[in-house]
Length: 199
Image (cartoon, rainbow, N blue to C red):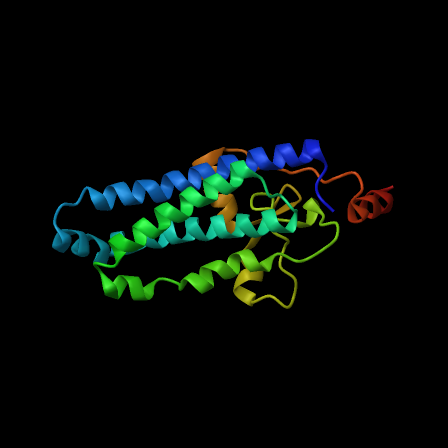
């Protein structure tokens, strides 16, 4: 079941804002590396501890975009506005990987594309996914026991809502100082049951 139109618009706006900021971070990394004229200097920067930490952070930001892609699939949120931003992110990411190829030893330490794509595969196929059981940023369903421990253990609870730690961190530092709290659709059986239990 798709999200109701008004909720769909609100979720689309929040996803688009976050994805645009993800694109800015990856684009900025490209600009920084492009600004280093000598490949040897670029390689030296990338191999430094600060350079490696910076690239690791950019990889985590890209991983967030893949999670958001999975959240969009879970909630049947296929719209042109989001597809365009995702396409721009992929183009910037591919360009960044081209820069990183000058430093093969660093490139080998990065997660493979298939591993990064797995972040979008945690979407649980549910006929009526409950937004209350999803990460408030990426809208990806909270991992259940069969998912890898590293995925399950990266969740935090803030104000009664769960978030991936990296999702919450990115949102608070790069999007808005207040975490998003998506509202679920009125026909959500999980929310109806929860509301009855609270009475």
